Amino acid sequence: MPIERHIKHLRALAHSRKPVVSLGRNGLTEPVMEEIRRALDHHELIKIKVAIGDREQRDAAVSEICGQTGAELVQRVGFIATLFRRNPEKPVIELP
Image (cartoon, rainbow, N blue to C red; front, side, top):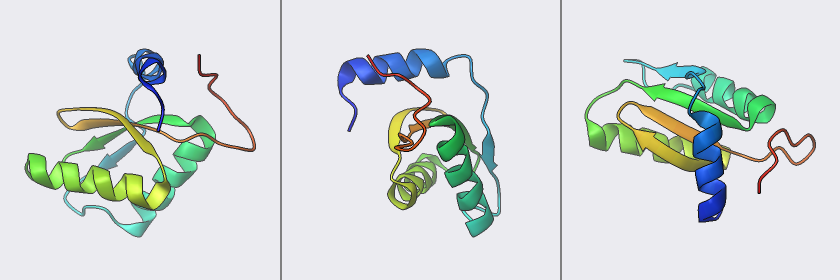
């Protein structure tokens, strides 16, 4: 788990980014999970738009994504979740 100063740094980096994956009414399907894995491998820090159900359903979907991908939740604001997963072979983001 990244420590607090890493979280602040990642939030700052994520601020200007747009969501790269959107979850819709079809929910968390395997093709969506594969797209999230590819995005994490390539970018390390991504935003996901989770436009499903109520807050509890969105929280459950984000938890499921983190569990299946090994990503850490940096923050979630409304429908947007920011995730981070270090790429051990090709690190993209330098943490303080």
